[in-house]
Image (tube, rainbow, N blue to C red; front, side, top):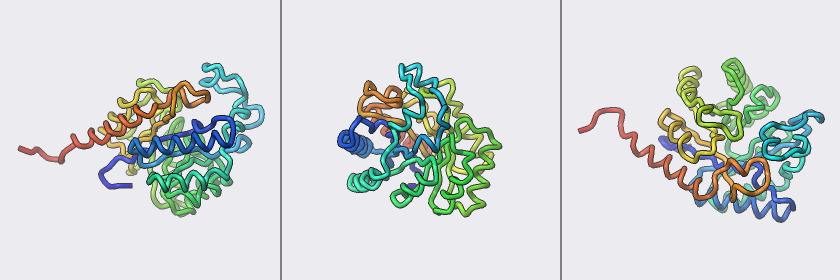
Amino acid sequence: MKSNSVFVIAEAGSNWRMGTPERDLKMAKTLIDIASKSGADAVKFQTYRSKTVYVPNAGTVDYLSKRGIKESITKIFDDLSMPYEMIPVLAKYCKSKKIEFMSTPFSIDDAKAIDPYVRRHKLASSEITHSRLIEFLAKTKKPLIISTGAANLTDIEWAINHFYSHGGKKLYLLQTTMKYPASLESLNLSAITHLKNKFNLPVGFSDHSEDPVIGPIVAVTLGAEIIEKHFTLNKHLPGPDNSFALEPNQLKNMIAAIHNAQKCFGKNKKLF
């Protein structure tokens, strides 16, 4: 990551899924184009299989049910699972567009599939106690970004120590609220300062709110070094993540606002 610059991750999530392999790949590349043109440092997808994330009778998810999506979470995840074969294709396309490729793994097999193609790894909030996955990611010697939604300080401290004890090197934390969408009142951005002071680590913010700038700008002023935000081609497309994601112009405006906010910081002394 560049020094003195916020690292912006444009989260494509599952918004590449369009129903056929041809349309899926076209949308994934379109999202990469949008992220690159918007000035994001990285574009991130997710790599998972339902059998390694949920038990077969996991049921439905509340935030999906409210949107009229009534299928089981395992069936939804099966449908949204990115084929491993897409990973090198998207990584190569990202390289051609001069943007970093990222993908969040949810199992060791997922991590093995993406590791050759990423510079850094991301651990989802739900996996913060996934010991074997953390061990694998530590042994890659690549930087790891850990989301901390739904985790308490004991969970976070355990994950940090487990990462380092298995050879991990560089570590970042993200303040996260596991609501989709998250209200502004639920973001708890003061935790950024708390996490920095508690663990002496760089901290960022993964924003699930619908507002394009308020959360990220407040986070940056509190010292966030990473901003992660979902984006989409169109909020009205089907799928679980499109409705609360930023559209292309909003993503571009958010990134510009972050960079402009940093220009205001100046130096840590009074100038004439």
